[in-house]
Length: 510
View 1 (tube, one colour):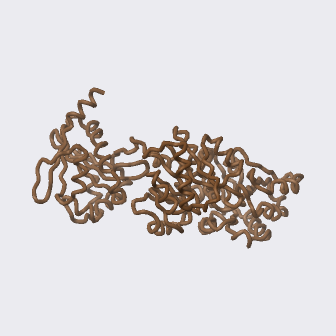
View 2 (cartoon, rainbow, N blue to C red; view 1 turned 135 degrees about the vertical axis):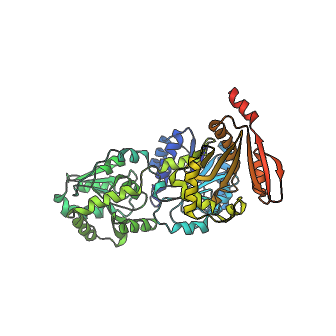
View 3 (cartoon, rainbow, N blue to C red; view 1 turned 90 degrees about the horizontal axis):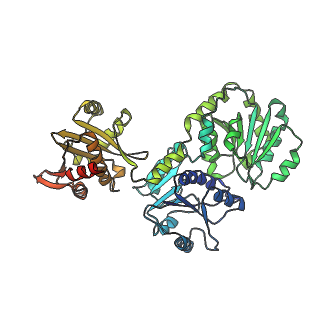
């Protein structure tokens, strides 16, 4: 499969959008997929990073308005010139200046579109929306801004971190109560030179700590100024584009830094911070970190003084309890597995849909599916089921030798409740697709996968039956597509069946 990523990087935009997309592309490439960046703004260093990852670049060189119909048509031409697309290929967009208008134009090429956003301030035409922020109220906004059929991946568990953060996380055993090593980092470019402000704030406190690690991106325009000013200060260690940011973070007790995606990197490693927002989109996440008492948020950069930084730093280094508590809270928020979860969903491998026996964690979700109004109207028993009664029924079903109760999973997503009831050499099929996954072709995939499950469960089963309400025409069509035939009906129900002899013979021959 091919994954086209629309993202830019510049001194003004920073490199965060491209870096999190590179985290995603690393795993896609490892799984033998092809990744192509579509970019309008890239400096030589970022272009080199993309190429070193094994990705290609389509460079947009045009005076046309960003996101306009004419620019969209140009991008379509550039893609068609060098690539032949299939229905499975994806377009991934990580850009605050693009919205549904650009996405709708690209629909002529792509069935599948993933949008990465954290603003919730514009409409999108996408299949999946990813926002790793902590703000739970955004889900309400996205319900208004994206198609009803779109999948929402919300929260830090989907944060796109490089694998090094997950790997280093496994090795950390930090129990110190005092600040000895400090990390200073304001992103790849730091256009307002918050780094210099922070160093000046820390100078009077350097005797109280062991070391200050200052991470600067290669594209930072202040490298020469900073290193010349402080080259003789042995407490300050300048790291220009270090090979492993995760290792450097893990060796520190406190960060003084910007907000944004770096927040998730820090939280994964349990590193609290003094946070200064350097862009509007960092305000919300910085405020939330402060409210959870993981970080100390000072405000927007232009209103933060050296004295503000110094005062909060001095209060922290003399506090014993806050540091350890903040570390633990941070690590609980994110596990570093976001890329794997997203790639599993994006890949949509033909074998990604699996049927698994019901576990205790799925009981509430099953109950919600069962009591959905449409589900009840299509069930044999249409009354709403009390939760206590539902729990009892599930536990009884799991103990019955002639019943198999399952959940259909597609990657990380629960798709449907599936039940088989044995009756001699036949089995009765019951299928309830969750409302957010209806009308997407899932029922047909599940019915096909179910045949393999039946054979593994009991090879003596020769026939599958289903009982469907006569007015449920959508389900009738799906079962017909899956090879079932109508064998009887009355005013209320249609009985359908499918013989498995042919499938069984093919399976045994293999």
